[in-house]
Image 1 (cartoon, rainbow, N blue to C red):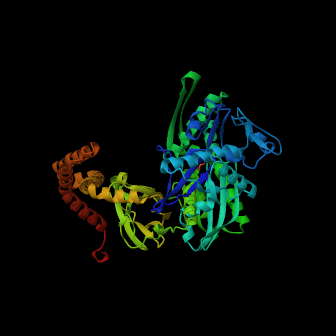
Image 2 (image 1 turned 180 degrees about the vertical axis):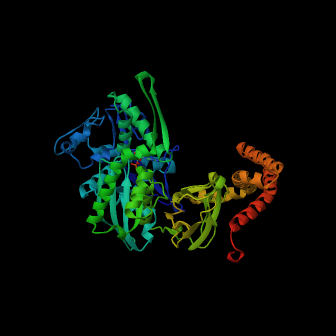
Image 3 (image 1 turned 90 degrees about the horizontal axis):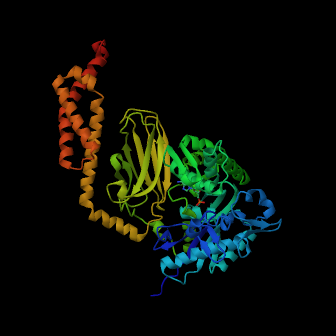
Length: 603
Ligand code: AMP
């Protein structure tokens, strides 16, 4: 049997480059030694050229000949960018017609730097897939690239030994990755906020063909600016110019920024012993948001312009796709969602979505059908994280699609103002054994635990697109997310998930029982502690004291993460038995209070 020819998709990014291809029916990013991205960085030492991670590692050793963000300089002249170039650690030369990077041996254009990155992408694919015949590729470029820039990209790729089957727009690739070409028509906004650049593109989709209606953006706006905002904040009142300290701070700032996408605050302790430099501060997410708000607003203004240029209103946009590492920042997500009045697509890794789309385009060119998206059953169960890290399955494996299932959930803590809905895929019982598909938050007014009635509907359409709606009935609050659950999941992974679920069925069952017992214990503790005052009024003191002893035993068991089912059952059942008479007494007491002063006829 002849081997199937592999066509790769390359996202030649400003900060990172990714290479992807189809594995079976699924697009996957090609990973080598745990790394999925090739930093778009090249170091010239005079004798050697380092690319990717090796160049990144050598950055502080060769700051003047390590070149990054070359893509920002495509099609630009030295005269145009003179001001911006002053901030770069590397040397650039040129005039009002050209721009060249100064390396020890010769001056190179931005495209010549990219040749090295493209070569590395091709070599990685060949090494990992163990096939040195791989050379056909689809390469993505920003939608605003003109013909000259597209041709130069193609020339660079050819110089890297690639045969370019097609150059496609990055936003189109992102839309393809989300399977949006299966929708018949619509206007799609692709918001791409990366490390160094911001692009907004409005696409018109008709019969599976995407047309770019308008683009806008800023080639000098992105995550780097957010890092700089943190560095400026940390250096407030300090006149620090040493490059090695500034580089160390830039790395620290990026780390802080990334952690703030998950955490509400991050302590910052930087002590460069050799450099006599010390910082001890806490950066909260609120503070970070105030530092970057102006820049994010700039992206919204650009989005408005793009809409206007496309002669569209916000309401005409049917889908919003988020791309780029910086689109993980919660403020960015909420401001984009608010502006377009729509929950953006965020199910795929925003760093990988363009590369996955390029691989999808490669697949379409090769004439193979994307039939996995047209599966007629759900390959793996999909559910929600519930208390204690358990996964409650809502759509079961092998359910015929389209399908729609609604389940009701509530809260376990008083006065919760947000309910996190974390969607998982898999057959196991706990979140750590399942695959996270996406998460979103439903804001609700503060209510007592158990009072909110959150109806969560999982709807999967005939193309396999999953939409999860959450609706809190008492407050009328709504939230939604759209995900393509089969993308990024290979056949082998799918089989492994199913096999593991069978192998671990017994262990999982027991773990689930334990999580449920713990949750039950927690609920009884909270409910009982709330009623102590009344309990002393209504019950014998010794009975209440006995309840308190068992509440303490239950708390201790939770604290030490008790795993013995029998012990947990004992505390939960005993507490249940002891508090049952209390519940009856409280109920009669409440009824009595309600009736005080009322005529019998009014009852
Ligand atoms: P890209 O150019 O799309 O590869 O995006 C790279 C940018 O995304 C860099 O500035 C990263 O610091 C930033 N980034 C990556 N992950 C996160 C995250 N979780 N939160 C905030 N920024 C991130």
